[in-house]
Length: 359
Image 1 (cartoon, rainbow, N blue to C red):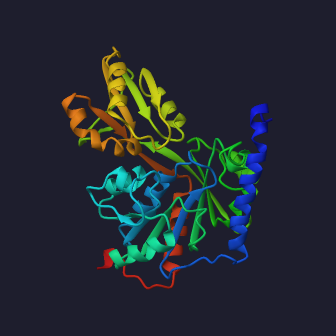
Image 2: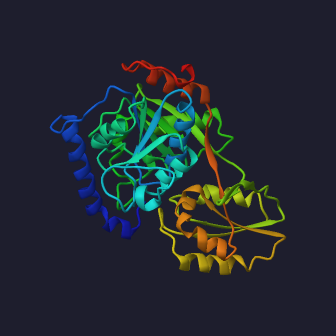
Image 3: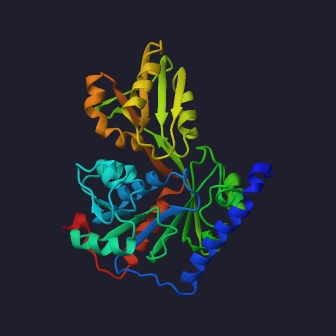
């Protein structure tokens, strides 16, 4: 049951939901028009305001496609300081493109990554910038109806699926649950690694998905933490170690749980999602970190947070404050089936392709 305080927010949630319904109804009735493109366009997003693991799933698609097709990523660049269309390069900062696009560009320098509030405008400019593009992935664009994507992927968190959430501001939903019907594929993210067939069947029933929608389940696999300024320096964590984890992401619980199972002690400092760090923040982190008295002590953050630490490189080096970040990758329980679905979609599009590996 909703608390009395949350109950007071119900009128605001109702108004928010009504506005969302009207917005989508105008596209459904073609009062507002969507544009489509000849090349394959994949959109990936969620109904909630964060915490579903969107960026790792975008990276999964990049790894899947980049060696076969010239792939581009287009995002709005949440919390960036720039405006309009911006094509990222190796020197771009979070102020230019936002933390997630910068993270993606750093990990995949050969992939075109751009940001633009209006994807219908951004896609043509992106194609002009790189005429070789063959596939475009729209990052966090499930509610962006100006573009009619050929394949729409909706993510939902295993521990908090959209069927158990409420509209903002009571909950974290951006639109009513009925919006899930627009998805071609639903991916249940951050699942336990021992998820059983019975659990999957029960979850699928709870989703009440349409028969034309395919449902997949994914989980997170963590890699060895590496120094943010020396990518070749990696850690092998042990029970004798202590970790001071700091992060500004929507859902830190799975990461915290992971470290608790690996090292002897974990301290954590959390910030709001997409938080811009300051020198004052780093000084306070350093003071707390210096109090750890284990055999080995490490200051660790996420790759997304690390992108927002790049402006402090000189400060961190001068103060001998070494920070590691932990990479993560998405794994699918039915990986081959999911991969084939993506490849089949791309290959079925009308534009003729020459595979990169055929050139």
